[in-house]
Image (cartoon, rainbow over all chains, first blue to last red):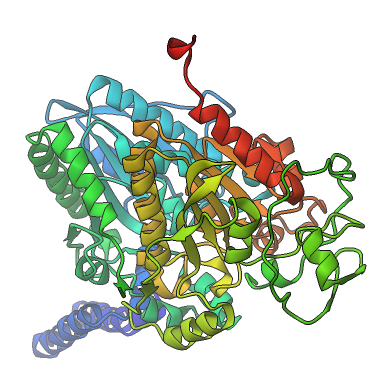
Length: 319
Length: 299
C-alpha cells in the first residue's frame, strides 16, 4: 500500500478517527450517526481542499508515489494483447525501458516507456527509472521497427533522469539520447507521449519528441529534478521545494506554456488511489488521439511536428 | 557544482600526438587583442608563466604542456575563419525571462557586460580556406555556455540557413547544458535544435560539431553528439552528467582522464582529437572533402 505523504497525514488521521468511531458504535450498540456524518463531511472538505490546493512540491511528491500505475500497468490495461520485446542488439537489455508490440481495439501499436519498480526490490532491478544507453537504443530499435510497419508509437515517460554512472558515460549516454531526438523528429509514423509521473530532463525527452504530448494531472516535467536544480542554483538540494515553485513544472504550467497538448485528470489524491480508473482514462486518451492522428497525411504530420518544436521558447529580437 | 566545470580544470597527461604540433600551413591571422587578466597568464595545468603575446602566438595553448586556454566566441571565429570573412547573423536575439525566474535578469546583465555579447552563442557566415561555411560558437563565459531559448533560436536559424544555402555548418560547443532559469523551455531547445538538425540530415548538408571545454548535459545529449563528424579539443570535458554527479552516483573515485576528449576518443564517441594549432586545417580538409565534385562529374 502506498504510504501517505506529510501533507496527507491530517486526512489519514481523520480517516482513522472515523474508523474508530464506527467500531465503537458497533461494539457498544450506540447510534452516533450524527457525529459520524459530521466527521465524514469534515473529511470530504479536508480532502477536497488539500488536493485542490496542492503546491508544486506536493505534486512532485505525489508523482513519485509508489503504487501509481507503471508503464507495464498501462500496457496491460490498454492492449488487448501485448508482446514485450527485449534488447538493443548492441550490448544488453535495459530493464528500465520496456517496449513491445500489441493490439489496441484490434489495431497495432508499439509501446515504449520507462519502467519504475512497484516495490523496493523491483526498483533496484529497474534502477529507479534511470535508464542506461542500451535502454535508449532499445527504444530506437523499436521506433524504427514501428516506422517500417507503419505502427503508431505510444511513449510513457516516468524517469527522474537518465542514469549518471561511469558505465553509462562510457557507452555514450549523450549520443544514445541525442540519436533518439533526431529519430523522433523525423519518424514517419504518428507518435504520442504521456508523462505519467516524473519527466526528468534529457532522460525524459529521449522518449518525448512526439506529435502529441500529454501529462497526468500530478506529473512534473522539467529540465532537471527540483532538488538538483536547487543544488546547482543555491548549492543546497534541500531547497527542492523552493525550486519546484519557481520552475513551473506542473501539468497546468506546461499546458499554459504550450509545451503539452493536454492534461489527463487523475483520481483525487493521485493515480495510486484508483489505478484502474487511471489506466482507463489513459486508454481513452490514447485511442481518441491515435484515431485523430491516423487521419492526417504523414507529411502534414511531420511538418506540424517540426513547427511545434521549432516555435518553443521565448526570446527578444532587436534589429 | 556545475561551476566547477569551468574554473577547476584537472591536470591531464601530456598528449603524445600533440607534443610537437606540425606547423600550421596558413597561420590564421589573429587580430591583436587584449588578453584578459593582464600581461602574464599562468597555465592552469603546469604553472608555466606566459606573456600575453606568446600566448596569442600559440593560439592560446601552453607551449609546455599543450593545455588549451579558454577562448571567447569572437577569438574562436578569428582562429577558424579566413580573416575578414565573418559576417555575424541574428545578433539582435537575446533572452527574456518567460518564467519570471528569480534573479535571471541580473545574471543575464552580468553575463552581457562580462562578455560583451548579447547572448551565449555567436552565429554567422564566413569562409574557411576560401570555402563558404556557416559557423556557430557557444561562449563558455556566458552563463556557463548554457542554452536557453535565445541560444536555441540562434543555432536553429544557423541550421536552417545551412539547409537553404546548402553550406556546411561548423558548431563549436561549450556548455554546462540547458539553462536552469528557463526550465522546461530550455529543455525543449534540445528538441528544437534536433528537429532542425533532422532537416539538415535529410537535405544532406554537412554538420561538424567541435567539442570544446566543457560540453555537458543537454547540449552533449543533443546536437554536440549529432555531428556527421565530431572533433574535440585536447583535454575538453565531454559527457552527459558532470564528473561530480557521476562520482556521487558511483561513490568511487573516477579515473583522471574520465570524460576528457581522449577518453571519448578511446570509447568511440568522437572522430578525432585535434590540437588548436591544427584545428583550422582539419576543418578545412573536412569541408573540402564534402564540397569536392562527385565521381559522376569526373573528367
